[in-house]
Length: 415
Image 1 (tube, rainbow, N blue to C red):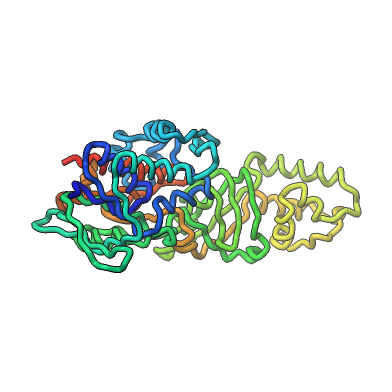
Image 2 (cartoon, rainbow, N blue to C red):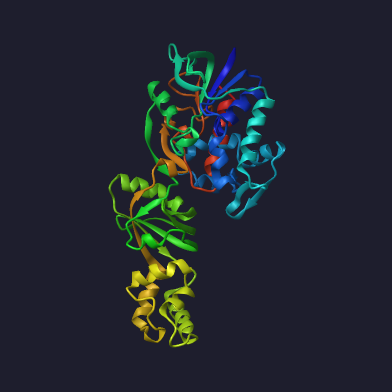
C-alpha cells in the first residue's frame, strides 16, 4: 500500500514525508508520541530558531563534524529554501542578531504546525502512539517495519523504502530515545559514540552556589583543554542549577564534553571586560573610586563593574570583604580585581546529561550513507535523515537546518 514509511514525526521526518508525498509517493509517517514535532515545539525556549541566514561558506563552518557530507544536502535544500518554504506555508519570519531566523509570532508551534499541515495537504498518512520495533529486510533490501500500535498489538506494514528520522537521545521526553541507532546497528551500520552536545557545563568553582540566575552579556570565553586553548567565543553566558549555559557555553560544550570523556583537564576562562585592556580598566576603576565617598563599601565599587548578583561571588573570589571601606582598597587589590574581571577561571568537571542537551553528537556513521541520496550503503531502500546521523552543529539554527536539508534529500528517494 505504501511506497515509503517514515519513522519519526520530527523536523526531519515531516520534511522527508511531505517531500516524498509531494512527489507522488504513498507515504506513512509513524510517530510513537501523541503528537508531531514535540521537540520543535520546545526549541529555542519555545520560539524555534529554525535556521541561520549566513552564506554557505559561513554556514559550513558551524557544522562540527562531517560538513563535507552535509554540503550536498544543503545545496539541494539550503537555508534560503527553508525560509521560502515556511513563508509560503503561512509563517512570517524575521532575522535576528547572529543571522538567526525565528517566526515573527515568537511561537515554535507555528513551525511544527506548518510542517504537519504540509504533510497532510500532500496526502501523508500520519499515525500516532505507534512505536516501530524493527525494520524488515530480505537480501539486504528493505520491505517494511514491525510496530506496536496504540492498543499494544504487534503488527507489520510493508513498504519498499523506509526513512529513519528518529532523532538522537537529547530531550528524551519528546520521544528521542535512540531507537534509530538500534535499528541501524541491527542492520550492520556503525554507530559513532553518542554524547550530549550544546549542553550545560558543570563547574567545581567554589562560588558556584552564588551564581544561580546570573547572566553575563558581551563576555569573551576561552576553553582550555590540558592548559591549551581549544576554542574561543564571544556572547552571553548564564548560570543555573543545570550548570554554565548560554550561547557561549553551549558552543564550547562539544569540545568540553569530548575532552571530559577522554579524562582531560578542562577549564573555562571568562573575560567580563573584553573591550578594555588591563591598563584602561585600571584607570576606569581608579576614576570610579575617586568619585565615591570614603565611607562607601567595596561592594559599591563592584556594583559599578558587574551585575548585582555577581558582587558577592567576586568579593569571595578576591577574599576581600564586601563591606570593606573603599578608602582602604589598595592598588594591589585593584590589580587582583582586574585579573578576575579579565580572566575568571571556572574548572569544568562534568556536563549536563541528555535530558538537558539541545542535540546529540555522534550517530550513524556518515561514511556508510550515500551523501547524494541519504540512502544506506548497506541496505537498499533504507534512508536516514536528521539527528540520527553523525551530524551536529553550533547553536544558532544550524541543527534544525540539518534536519530540513537531510529530510528533504531523503524524501526525494533518489536511487
